[in-house]
Length: 592
Image 1 (cartoon, rainbow, N blue to C red):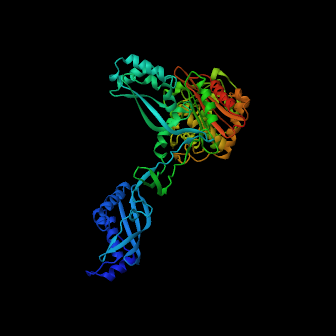
Image 2 (cartoon, rainbow, N blue to C red):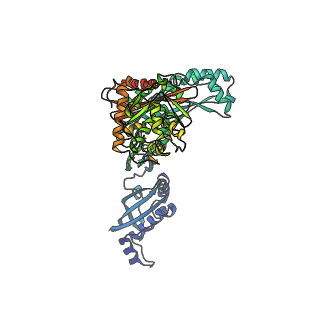
Image 3 (cartoon, rainbow, N blue to C red):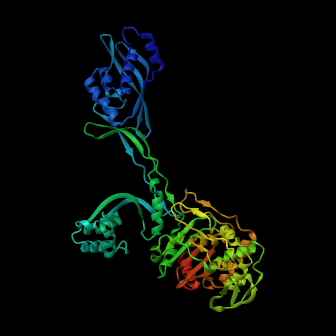
């Protein structure tokens, strides 16, 4: 589209439609109009050198990858048979890019006819006669992912995809064995049998491993020429440490991979006849995407990971910052990894840790306080269910705080029988158990506490058996709620809000004060005294009976750090306390 300036309009009006001599502005308009509509043949014919102008004008459109152009002509300065006419070109380039600049057309009159005196400056004022213009992309630096102290967890890099196709292997056993030997140093789960079994299920090549540049350089020569093995080189977000929350960082990578590119910049450069860049005519800097920050704390994550790795049974731990909801650590050992992201989405009976919710329901409904005397016989019959204490211990009549500290099943079964059918359901929601959490980069399930109409079921639920199931993630929220006074909104990736549905109102101050008193007593004189030397720790132990064993639980908090530790069929709750203590011992001085 051609838009004429006022000067051009005046000149055309003066000339009207007469067949008289045409002025320099009108001639410049004709050239600019043809150039703007991509009619390089017509535009070139209005110059003094059509054979030179034609390819140069065409190259401008092609090398700029232009989608549209508009041209405006301005005032003319005439000196005898020569003149200059101002122009403004506005190019529409790919990806909504716009480039506007001004210049001058040099005009000449021969035999009464004005023409554009051809020079490359008719395209751009800085363009030389042997030069062309080229549009270039300037890639934006890709974003990184770092943990809360600022160290990198995922960085832009290259990965080498190692694939194996059984149908292309002349000796599958040899190839699989060689692959396993090469890759096992980076991933000890890769085995000859595993490679062959997976390959047998796939009709095509399947991915055995992804290696970083450094890793590939160690074993690339060993892989070359293996029949059935192929490799490709790809851009990706690469972990800086394979051992740092590997399952979690895999989920994070999937979440942010489409957001790390930022907005690319662009420039227009002049290139001489030898293909060498000579000048930059226009430059728009790229806009890199900001780095993504994980709530994970490297020291807490590493301490928790080492603690669960020391156990043979499936072990896991979730650590949350009560004041902010930041997820500081999600740790699982390899046996637990085989079941998926169970630390945050696996459901298990909570055992006596759920007495925290039962106590909160009793205090909140006015049924009991930490000082209320409750019976703690060795066993109690409620409805048709006989509920015993561990090893048949008996405390007699004691304050509820003592029954909680010593984890008396009979006392809390009795307390549960006093509650309404949905008291535990409503109270659990106040502590984070039951609501749905949609957390970017982290699959979560909090648990289920269904209303219990039957008295027997209600008493079983009250001691964390029955139909109550929870995840370690949810029980970490329970501890965090006691520490903070209300349930924090958990998050993993800064800038990505968490959606919560089904959350309850905050517990009352009386409930929180009572639970804090009782959880501290558990550590000072109750079932978690093993951890009493680790500062001002508050906690609750639990042992959940399941077929062929029992789960070992410990939830608690210290300062601004709350946790839930679970050992699947780990036996005594003291084992979960020991794992938590190992985590606290490994933290640097000054940690919460």
